[in-house]
Length: 106
Image (tube, rainbow, N blue to C red; front, top):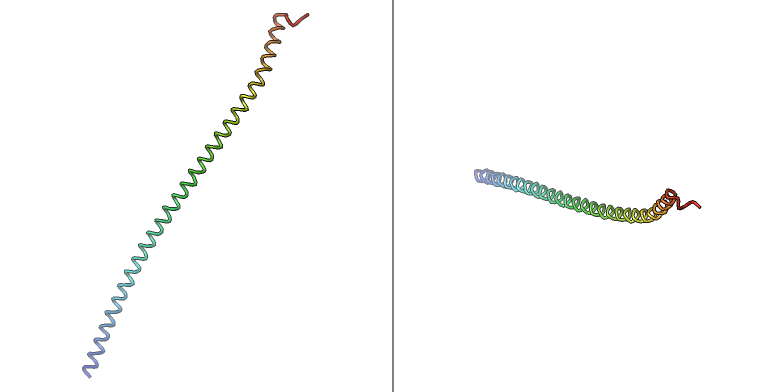
């Protein structure tokens, strides 16, 4: 009977040790999973920030190109308008000068 009780107590002791070891292993696994999750979240956040930065840089570059294109077009239009008006202004000044000097009258 003593041997049976001693055997049961020994088995119970081994079972407690196994349960404790399993609990420690579970805690260690949970801590590793938490660390892995934090690392993954940081990696995803960094990747998202880089992608956002790249998108913003691309949009700014596109906007700058569009601005330069619009300015070049406006400059060409201004030059063309000035050339057209320059001729008209020259004719008007010439006619005014002739009118003032009396050359335009018969």
